[in-house]
Image 1: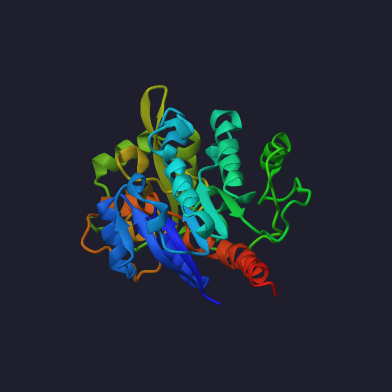
Image 2: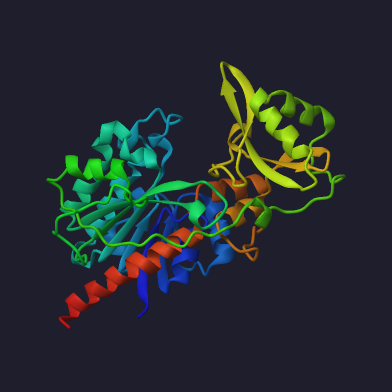
Length: 372
């Protein structure tokens, strides 16, 4: 059976890409960013895409769907957003999502999926997450919490928190017994639930996904040593001189190898000084919205006596989010592409959730609704 979905804060359409893989059809989507809408339309049929502010949407205008997804803005949950949480202008858009769902009345979707950064768990000492769950409870949804790292699917370290709300979940209203060794529901999640037992919870049994054995080697584009993408001697020299002694020693060891190795690096501010830090493993750090130099990742290629540095490319951003090389960048700038992907979801992670969690719960809801 094909289920129908509405995609709030749709961005460039990576949730749509994931739901397609799980046989769930997106029939309505919304985002406020014109560039993201352009990328969405270049890669998906987008006659249903509504470009505009979610605050202008009324529940009666959203079609009847089985699932609603919302990757609402994380800006105010971070230190960069001063941890304003749900009181902030950006992350506070959750309330608009909840308003629209409430306005749908009896047509409210059977299941909702929310995605955000792990900092949501600690925002306002847990008060923000409690308010989200409480609001979903009031809308008729029992809630489940779990976390997932994109690293299980692609060579990118990207931990995210997920909330599934279900009007008729498989295990609704049963005691929530959490395994402290479960990486999907670690002790901090268990502790939060224990502190908020007055809320309505459920737990859907999930087995860990099979971890993909992929590294940067599998996703990076290859450029010859004399290609213009590589930084010049002055810029590269500044990069390597900024490394700590430990990191510089790591680069030297890799440089002496007969094998070519790749690492990623971020620019940080330490004691008021801008420095570069290189990851010790062959995966990328969490992709971010590329608004400036400190948010962009550099790629270090090292080995056979040489070490080179360049910026990560837009195509590499796409691959690290699990999107195929057929994704059309539609003539937008590389920074705009990277902004879109840095602000998006990991496609295979969402596809796994949709297949292993959302579809079974939706099928249960259909069975109960039909009285079978």
